[in-house]
Image 1 (cartoon, one colour):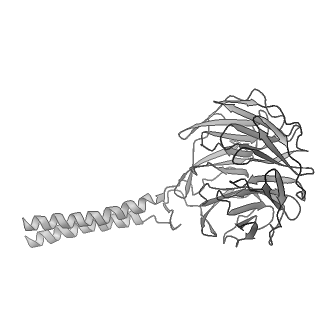
Image 2 (cartoon, helix red, strand yellow; image 1 turned 45 degrees about the vertical axis):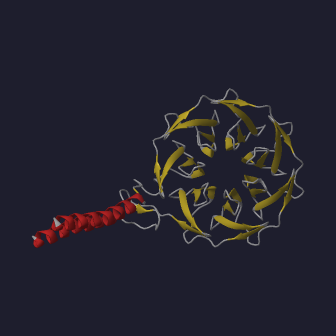
Image 3 (cartoon, helix red, strand yellow; image 1 turned 90 degrees about the vertical axis):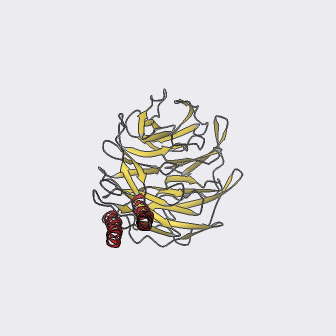
Length: 398
């Protein structure tokens, strides 16, 4: 009886130690298939996380025009393409906050394609009855998913829809329109304000919403220095950042009721023309994508001061055409024109570390960022070896 108890006890100990080790490592790994970011077909124009961080969508210049990936640890696995694809180059993508809808702004009629998600399947909805007037360049949902704005290159330059169920109905155009092509759009989190970055002075146009009416506010006293390319509100609606051509390449405003006042420029400016801009959800970090190396610049905010952080050790190699933080601020993703077209960074404190591509079939440790192909095998051998050792021990005692 004693020998049996000892053998059972030792087997239980080995199991309790070995099994969690194996499952702990394997649960922290992903099998990314073709890589941390699946190989994509061509130059990427835009990139966007879903609010929950589970999906990552990229827009590009060739068919299928969009790639939708699902996150698994630090791995992003490409999903099957939707049955109905956008009809042209995708220049803007946005998810509704609840992740139910995804809108794509693109060239070629209907200029905007809206999908409804069920699980990992994205199904195209019927086109709105009234379409944008020309090639669409940017798109944004209001936080509650009620409104959708599409920026485009033909007057009225923005088209605003109101959603009822799965139907998107065009609202009357604002009385005062943006001056030219819309390049970036964003709603404040409470849905009260809508910002449009555009070409031609004043380069930014800000609207205030009352019910379904959008009324243009007075232009800020200090305007961006060149063509607006991107717009983003901080989550609390206090700050508005506009990326633009011409130094200082990014202009940051602080809002007080309906007045937007320009802050002092950061001491260290982006290295080239601003192309896109995004706040982290907590408003602590601001990233500006631009057209000169290091191609994106990350700032950390302390009250109204934005201080440049050290560049990542590994940089993207071309213009940052799109930039986005995940909702939890752990990931930063940039789209660009050169291989691999989309690059993902993981944030730890103020350090952003590039997540490297992993070869097909490899396993990836999402905590350490190291390849660990052999670890499951190694620990399985340890477990099996422990069991054999126990059996040998018991046999000798007999």
